[in-house]
Image (cartoon, rainbow, N blue to C red; front, top):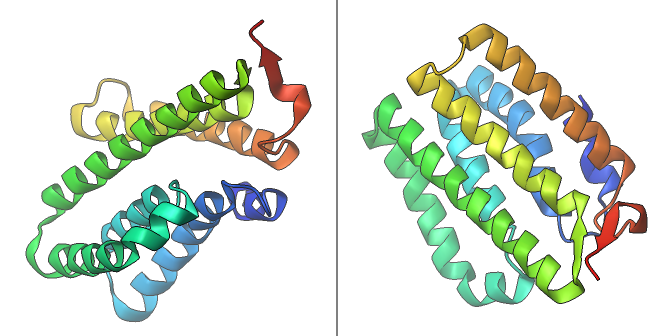
Length: 178
């Protein structure tokens, strides 16, 4: 429930669209699965891809929009008709790895431009790392599955509460390096 509220708090920030995709992905997945029997993983792959796309500036998106839309359509069609669950999970992993890299790049860019560290950016990277670790745990079972899922979900809820309280531009969560 917390993640559904975050886009309202992050309104008019760069990350609004990112949080909106996160907020809509679960309800949309359940609805599409219930109404049209569309596999849940397919909805997640699409939402993950959209999460990656919205992490780029509007100028880049405008420049490459036709290509992005075409690739999105191809990805959805390909995953729906030609890919088995294991391959969809690999695609999901690769997309989330790209999201983690993009968020890490945005963190480094923020630090370089502002000579400061923002807890907001750190927690975005941390959140995405948790998503990836859940996925890796699902494949490798490096931790007790049920315990790890509950623990990591609790941490994600705490991160969500942080994003409900603070915006990207909150001064209280920025620490100068000089």
